[in-house]
Length: 248
Figure 1 (cartoon, rainbow, N blue to C red):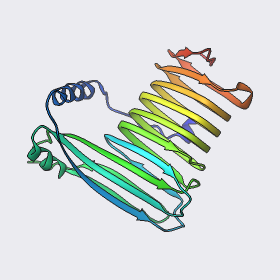
Figure 2: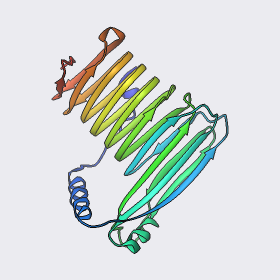
Figure 3: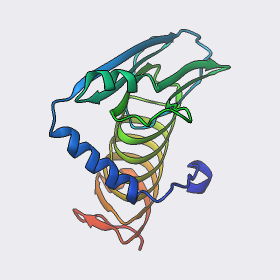
């Protein structure tokens, strides 16, 4: 199976201008005392027939955990930060979410809605998702500008991230990853891993099974028993750390 068959490719707009604006904006806010306004939502899906969770985050921190209950619990926190509390409260109103069941899937998404005549929000907006799910449930995640953490999954996992820190621990089964501009750490993995990374620092630690990947303009660090994994990784303009060996 080709990597392109397993991980859906998504085209992103040029990030330079957005990245600079976000940096300058965040530095301005740090210099002031921020008022934090948060809205919390909790939903539980108890249908044992659910086989997949699909989570699309924007400027989000995502934390996926497993438990032995045959239900899925979702905790969502929407946050606005600004020196003026009334501004933060007003900007929080443009943040929305969906968390619904459709057939055998749970669909979760956060987004911002600004009407034509409405001013753009001035606050630093952020979403946080904490999900508890059975280990054998499939999951698909897309996220931008945040942190994505997964632990204990044992089915099919697909990730697509941009400007994110990604940490995966004790994952089993099939894992497909496409990441741009960030870091990726996979620790204690067993199964089939396929990944494509661009401008990403990649660390593969204690992996077993089969691993196919492509890296470009980042770094690659492989810390594992090579006899326990079949490696096939192509690199381009990638820094190889700690004796990592890959195809050029």
